[in-house]
Image 1: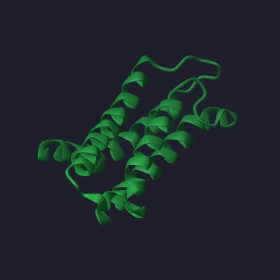
Image 2: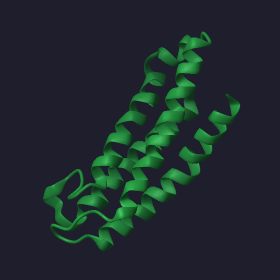
Image 3: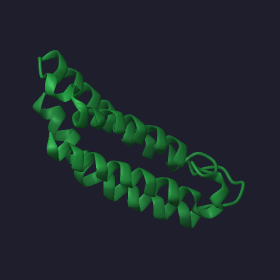
Length: 128
């Protein structure tokens, strides 16, 4: 289980925030009104899904192992924010993004929201 935690930490603390910024800028630059999402846009949400799945697996392992501290208030937010991040990642790269009224800036704004969620989740995990 230490391997799952290690992958979850490296992916969440180092790779995912940087990749989110890169993808946000890339989507904002390549956006076309009414255009379909780029085929590479399918892979970014999968990375966030992988991160959320690893976190949920580790969370369930902790709960089954008898660690009831993770069910208390600030700690329970970590897996919930992970699921919210996965939802935002899927909505951010589809069509017009999470905020369609922003036009070209919709993917950028959506992915910046995702970045804030990821950073908040990393800071919350530091307290665990």
